[in-house]
Length: 243
Image (cartoon, rainbow, N blue to C red; front, side):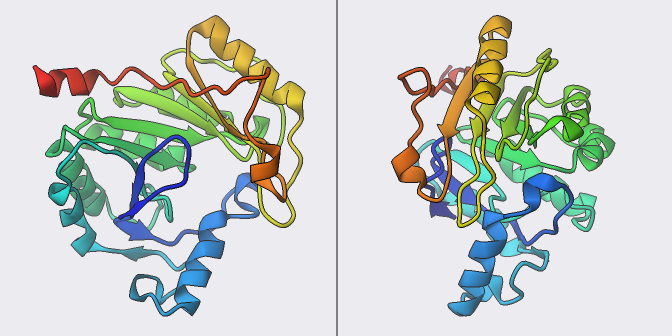
C-alpha cells in the first residue's frame, strides 16, 4: 500500500498488478508507465512489468491499518480482469468485508465481468464500486454497474475524451470527472465537463472534478466555475461502525 496523490482517495492497495488495454481510455495508461518505471528500479512486485500478477501476501495489509482509511483498490490493475480468478476476487472482498472501518473504492473497465460475478460477492456498505466511462462508446458499463448489488456506485469519467450527454444516473451515487495528463494528452472540452456537472446537480448525484489535465496538470489545476468540486457519497458504513 502507499499514500496516494489521487484527489479522491487517501491511499492505494494493490492485491493484483498489471493489466491490458481494452478501450480508448487505456491509450495512455498511467499505471503501465508507472509499472515499467518500477520494474526498471528493480522493485520485485513489478519484476514482470505490466503483466498481470496476483499478490496473496497483499491480502493481509488492510488488517494492519490502525485508523479508518479511504482506499483505492488496484490503482495498478483491474480486479475484474478476465484472468483474475473468482476465488481470488472473493478473497479480496472478504478482506474488505472484515475491515468495515475502511472505505474501499474499486474501479473497473470490465463491467461485463463485474456483472457476471456480482452475486457471488458480499457487498458490505464500505465497498464502493465504480466503472470507467471515458466517452459515449462505453456508456453500457453504467447499465452493467446499475444491475449489481453494490451499495455505493460511482462513475470515473477520466480521462474524459468525449461528451457524455443524457447520462442515466439512476442508482449512481457519485461521478468523478478528469482530463488526461501526460506527454501527449487528448484535450477535454469545458462544455463536456459543465454538462456532466449540471446533470449531476439535477439528479442530486455527488460530483467531483479531479483535474483539467494536460502536459502540466498542476498548472491547469482543478477549478470549475471558479471553485473546486469535492463532493463525496455519504459514508453510511462509518455511522454503522460508530454505533
